[in-house]
Image (cartoon, rainbow, N blue to C red; front, side, top):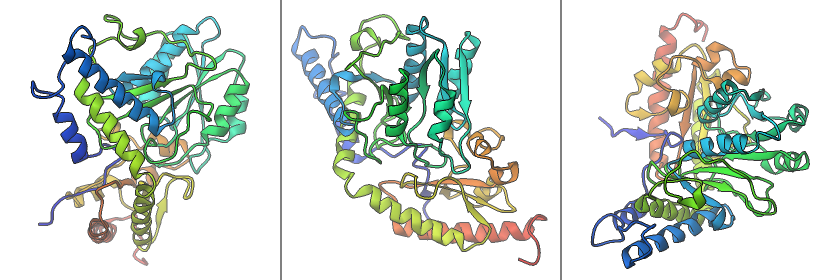
Length: 392
């Protein structure tokens, strides 16, 4: 039996060996293990320096001021702090928030909570290719709109939104812009010195770092973004995120982002070649539809629907290939992807959709082996399907 093939990098990435080694050096007495807040002695100061070095590494990848970054437990907490923090701190200005129906549940669930708390949320429809037209965003902005939250890269389809244009619009209207960049950091250029983005969420485990750590960028200039903290009890991170900082995880995230900055010149292009190789092979099966914009998409994600079969049946037939039917956070449910349904896909097409996501350690051999196994499974399942005409 062949070794399992991992093609679910959008769910999580394996930790890069260099990152794992760096993390390990910040755990034990022989390494840098102190509490970064204990600045009265050497051990604490050593840890604090490691934290600030990591903050600078993360900031360098997105061309931001290190002082504008707050450590969190991941992108989900960063999203919570951004949305709850901004809406609560700016309640006197208004209680309206703008987002899209294709956002991650880590945004949509927060919006539902804000609605229960008396806020108002507009959920934008995307075009069939997954992009949100600028005119649709402009039409939805209101005098009481405080915040727009739109992800950079969709986690299911890989579709890229035009943040520079969106940010220019929100800045002109006096509306703050939050971006979930968990799927784009290290894969696409991000320049927060020039982009009019006010808050941006990051995750380590989507970029070959450990799970359980992330960051939130909060712009301080030209105008400081006001936030109400979620956590109290220590004053860490300028009083906006209390709790002892996990030095080992933070240092590992810094190392992951440093490596990503070095790899940006070559890694996305290599992954895009593998993705295109996969798509060309799958397309020969016939009646295979690509979901999402074919050009405005990140290199590592390919979402396709196979006619006449369900994704669940296909995944069960190729147990040694790790792919997904959508977001890892909702994969346990039986409902069709909310992202694909928002893009106008019918239930049959949505249920036949599979997300392939490739990464740093994906090889040509793995792609070819996956194509062979999936092609055989698709043909086998179609022969059994009453929906597949015999004329095929």
